[in-house]
Image (cartoon, rainbow, N blue to C red; front, side, top):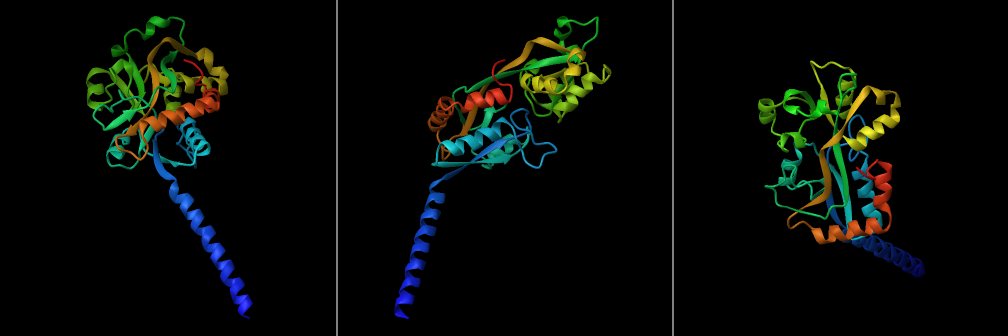
Length: 264
């Protein structure tokens, strides 16, 4: 009887040690919240049970290559991202640029880890060529709410856009392309789209390529960085080290190829 009680005591002690070690390991991983918003191909979140895209893949890869931090996705929106950041709801955000409205925020930026760009599209008519994209102020434009564009000098304020441009603001990238394909100039003449998203769309819908006039010039060329909160639990230096690790292990090349980010 005494021996059985002793065995039971040993089993309980071992289990407590294992649980304690597990808790210690979990506690050792500092949780880092990563903000993201609908921005194909970096985040696809519309009509999906779970967000996916380049940002989500990056988060998963960061959790695989180290055990000091646990990165978690925090969903926000293109307009709400500044407010959520200021409220401390997330710690860093990927595929961003400090010129996109972050100048007044307490952030530090990583090194550039990817590049990309946005182009203009219009319905392809016989009388249209690249000169059709010369004067945006006199065209009916389509853009995404909360996005910063080169043709607006990166000013996303809705009142400013209404005063200086004829811009229809959408929340759906597919809608922007479909508006152009509808060939209704009274609604939309030119849309601004991420080149990588457009590439994927035309791979999936090759019959539409001849219907689109695509600009040779870029609205802007992305210099993608990771923006990190000042005094966050992770430093920019550490983020740069992790970016280097992902580069060395081929993760960034895989993400570039998967989402058409391997060149502008």
